[in-house]
Length: 113
Image (cartoon, rainbow, N blue to C red; front, side, top):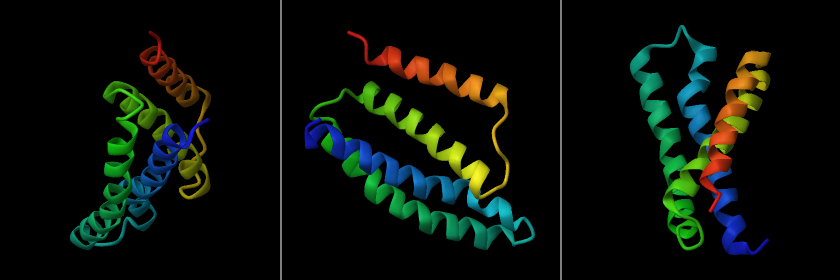
């Protein structure tokens, strides 16, 4: 697979790791005050944007915007599934996987001509 097709996927993967920590990482620290949690999450999200924006800019040369969004959704689900089980200690149940599977099918449809 050519670099121009792989690089956006790798950047999306990295950006989703940052964003998953920004959005859900604080759930392990529910006793922390909300304002500091928001500020820390915003700081983490900065790095997500530093990867997401180039991923979409570079990716738009070979993928359509809907394809980039579909890819991003599938990557988000995969990252979240691992994060939920590993970091939060909340493995996904069959119905979660089934729902995520339907989203993967929707993303696949976006790539059909």
